[in-house]
Image (tube, rainbow, N blue to C red; front, side, top):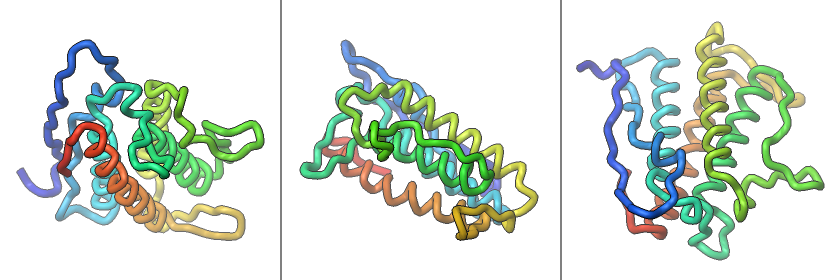
Length: 192
């Protein structure tokens, strides 16, 4: 198999009887391999998909309560909060900046401030469905773009699709580092 073929690595979840299963477990067992010899768009999108898959893998096999748990006090981070946050980031950069859709956030407080990290009663099934839908829409927008030089705007600021993809890889990589720590504290699971 060549490096520029898209491949996935199987990851197995931990079996737990009698615990609530989530969409995260059913969908987090495969990971995209970042391409090594492809063109720029394929390389960037494979790196981004690898990071997306890593987040799903970090959440796989956990119960609703585990996904909601904030294990690194005083931080408000939880795995479910990260999934909701990254759904918002996908929406913001791809729908709003790149495609000028002017979509509002999914989770907001009554005063309009973002509430993605407030997960005490949040539904993991909803969060993962929204996140996956935003990732799929982002993939469609990237595939349809004429080139990586296509421009998006946020107010007066201008961003190329190339910059957006690079930023998204950085965003996921940073938060996947958080996810590593959260998962290890939850159940001792470590690894890439």
